[in-house]
Length: 338
Ligand code: PEP
Ligand code: MN
Image (cartoon, rainbow, N blue to C red; front, top):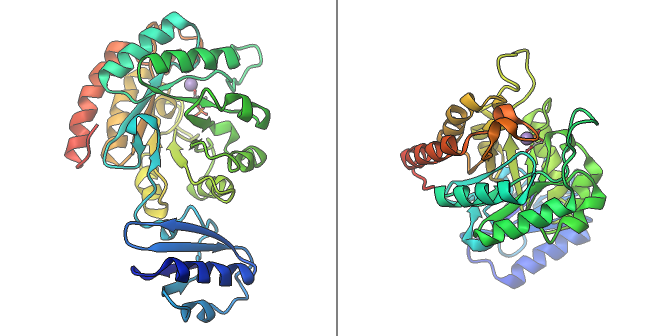
């Protein structure tokens, strides 16, 4: 259930309503917008008579949430969620941000060069996997924690934030000092135990759409994190499996406006995994920004052809720089900055 408080509701009235909801056995999640406080009640609400809350002082209106996801739905935060990072970076605000770097962290030299060029071109995050989910157990599996230490040092030296994939619960705690944002990969979108545990942290989580997942399933997965009280969730469209073979995945651009409509969570477009081909990355990145993406996640590497993973979809540095200039124009055309 959603309880929208009146604009001028006092703290005492809000606390009174929260108390009444908790007494009815409902778990309350509170959000304070610029206009009003909205309370989402999750739990056994089916048998409740909502009128009992409607008449409490300070309440504007009460309604049931018809969608299966309660906290991810836009009704709870109509103004949209902005996920705040250090360096004043806000994902979900007016500015579109770029997260860029190699698929996998490989060496200090390569990461240094990448970070320098990403920062100079206007990027905000250095991306790079240290724990890699590879289809083959014989493929490069990532450098692990030493890779993350490297990433932290290089990112800090260049004023960038870090984002890296977490694959299992045991990695959460050791990763905390090194990442500004956890990435949950497509293959783990429905690793519900991992999602629940990430809900216990307050570190932002970028949740990628599973390669065969519907948008409702993606939103339900985000609900696992949100329901733990971690509201710093960012959704990511990274392409899905279809019958088309011309691209590695089919980048579902429509997912971006659909998610923005259904949910308050920021949405990121990943045209690298979305297409699997470096010549298709820029067009899809531009399409994603035009469609309303709050950030772009893109793979770039100083020696892209020789990247240890995902080489075919990794941009050359020059391609990335050209793309950044083009994205600025697209962002401006849709009323945003970059
Ligand atoms: C990645 O970002 O390198 C990655 C493995 O992504 P995905 O989970 O979308 O395949
Ligand atoms: Mn990759």
